[in-house]
Image (cartoon, rainbow over all chains, first blue to last red; front, side, top):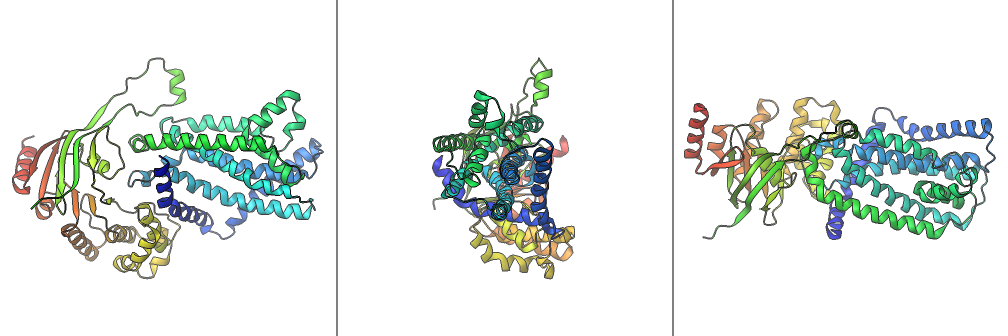
Length: 261
Length: 245
């Protein structure tokens, strides 16, 4: 299986990149200002949350705007990729029913699109860090393994959602609800560790991978702290395991998908 | 002379079973499980195709022709039985795979070509030939959404016709575009098909096409092979059978 995965990756990698680029280009094709929405969209949501929770609910979090923006950026990537992966086979029916393509490549295409938008947001975060004069430490480098962990976890979950999304018609409805709940348990605009009562903050803050990754990113980017390295490694390994199982599941079943859709 | 086989199919069975879609809502509200109906589309067929041979498949609608073709192309997996391609590259001739409407014709050539399993370099090497064959003029650098449907199919046809594989699977012989391009594309198809090196399987309802192009004709009925052999006798028998029923 590993060899097959490697060969498929080698063969279709370029297609995934090319296709991601094509989709991004399609989005801005009608108006060149459309790319502005890639910036404005997260920026506006950040302003809303900053207003609601910074002023109305009086959060005293340091660098609150950046705090929220990091949350939105990573959450958006996670949320969008997962939601799209449920429908990715149906959305690509014309391709899937005409040629053989390893189905997880379609996930890479989506993740490429969402990843690119995430990178734009990351640049904004960088700019905000300069504006707010956040003291930068070497801990910033931990952001790289954090991103890698995020990517393998998203990929792993997406594989399973891709598979079950083919057979279960209303999976996306359920996923929507689950993700909304998870959104509030992730602390996109509040600090899980401070706001939740004692044992629960630990359970959720560490047991919910995305919440943990958010906390870790904020720690290393704006608060100059070293993230919990063992936990990070653990989530990375978990992500890899889920990905392996997911790819195996896809390989076993992918040729039946077209019979169902 | 020893004959080399390009494709060997043994006991191929393909069914659509247990693959019914379900939903969480249905599972909650329905206590009696619906019996999954099993529909066997292809019932254990075996055949081989020699290298360079042109095999035509004929049969009435729903007899499993296209299912067989899809299985050969690797889009479906067989429930049992084997398909041995002896390491040949194979493609199902299909039009406009993975086209993105906002992208230019030229970009779509690359995109579609890579999806058909070619590397970017291979596609780029053939790009000029494709562009020339498609006869789109300056439209080649315009987004595909601006194309008329004729132009769209001209481009799509050119991509599939010029990026060749060892084994070609054809679901209905295609001819597209206006009268002139129709002729050109039909001739191109013919020259592709009759290339001595290439193994071709054609699914068609047209007796004339099969008579003209094929070396062997296979008649499928209800997921099984009814006759296989020289085109003339098989096709005559098929016509007789269809008229009686």
